[in-house]
Image (tube, rainbow, N blue to C red; front, top):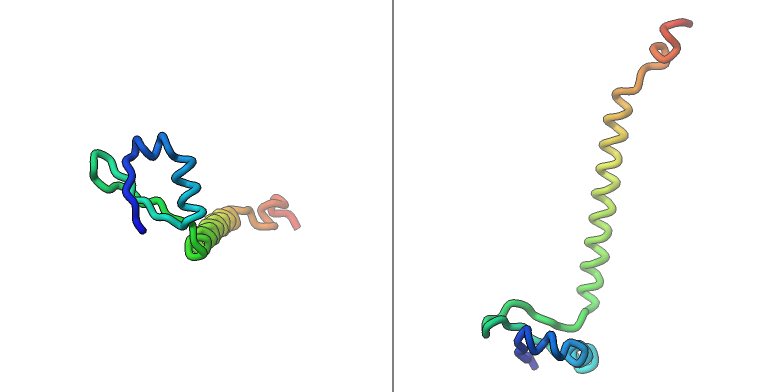
Length: 88
């Protein structure tokens, strides 16, 4: 069953509303001035998978940025001969 709740009422009854969502798996449509703006619903296994996928994507992006930085730095390193002053 989907229930509607105004943002002010939600503010005043947040603990009870969250308890109802958790225990009864209730879904609330949150309204502002009578207009729907958000949905409050139980966290699901699908949500967990999405969070984990998002975290994995963020970590992969960080690794890719690091790889690019290392690659760019690698290209600017002096050669062994240059580092030794050209002497052999």
